[in-house]
Length: 581
Image 1 (cartoon, one colour):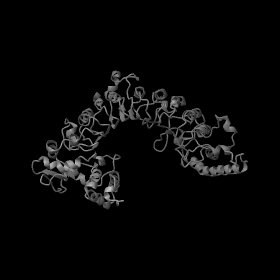
Image 2 (image 1 turned 135 degrees about the vertical axis):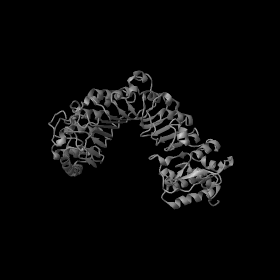
Image 3 (image 1 turned 30 degrees about the vertical axis):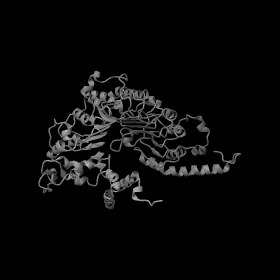
Image 4 (image 1 turned 90 degrees about the vertical axis):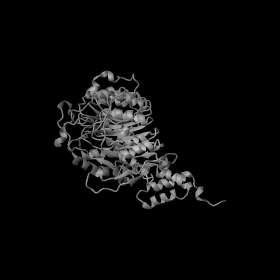
């Protein structure tokens, strides 16, 4: 048997070694070892170079591969002008010939991701990012690459993240001129990110048309633009027929563009903004009503920031996807009366995706500092009852200010029967400045049965503990002063210690705006229902009373465990020798 040599290593092993060395960004010796591997022999050079050039923060490393007699770099200027005028600049010395780009092309064909370090959360920043920011690429350099360089310059590029535009440009120019890398990429790109728009207004639909020209097969489109961009309107999004994900939370989508998105057959994820107060929504003919148009057939994840509430229901009723699993909405401005909340819940409960929806999050913030008295009182639990048809729901979160969303014991019982896989239940009442409007502003408990008093009681938690076996986070406003007859009569006949033996695995409980009664009674009840609480929040009302209850709670938990141990010793064994559960 011949001794192992370096040639006995498979290409996959060499690639994994190179990836490990590349990720060791804080270790200078690891980067040196990576360069040494690339220059050892041709067998190691190919896979190592593929790893080294896979992701680039900019095109500067490629420009540095040009011959020294073709271009040079001017020294950094003294700090007399603006920062962008003090950067090093590439200067052409002569007219290029085809052989000048051979070395650059050898490295350029290995680049798969470009500009990733400039998008936070997409890729890890490169250690050379600050160094690359000190270089300036002139317009003449870009024009030289377009006229004489290889076409395309990056033939195998898959992800392009453009975050810079030219400092001075004509707003009427196409995106390829404002973001020059668009002219040098292959149509293989499937992930495109665009951001850092200049201050001048720019048409969003023109950007879409430009993307469709140089990246017609793009599958993921990310937009980051706080300003300098007009609303997205027009049917041109239909040209991106391969689009699967669009993340444009800073872009307001108007009716015609939303309809174009809905017709894309492969679109799975949408994250954008809808402003129903725009005059374009006044014409009902620009957007179809109902599901006759078969919009969004493959949608799986939907995140929306909505302005002007009344248009939400009509939009939800246009979705025909039977695979939507994640729905999150942020509602800003306007009023949410009880009848509109009922229509919203009904549109979701009767939707085609009611059998696949797993996460439902609704964030309603009207922005009122002093609310309208007509919307001060909480909504009825019957408004939320259509949501009980979501059999696969695992997370439900209502984050509201007004109207208050207070559920009652009957709705808690419905949850325990309708959502067997539920893991997170949050009905959070938003507070302003550390205090909520109403009774808790003065730290005074409301009267039992008052309109602004929580409707659920400790009894309503019993079916949740008994049937929701996967529940691990819970926030429901409750009134611990009220005693009601349990829904399950069997629970009244079970000894308390036996109930603790089959207690819920809930580990996070938040009191929210709940009303505290007797701390000893509440601690005794919670120790029976939820004996494994680790994260305990005292909420925003009567915090001192809840803090006292949480001080008592661990003592009751120890008592319950001791009762279970004594019970196990006292009971006789079963015929097979095993203790009875």
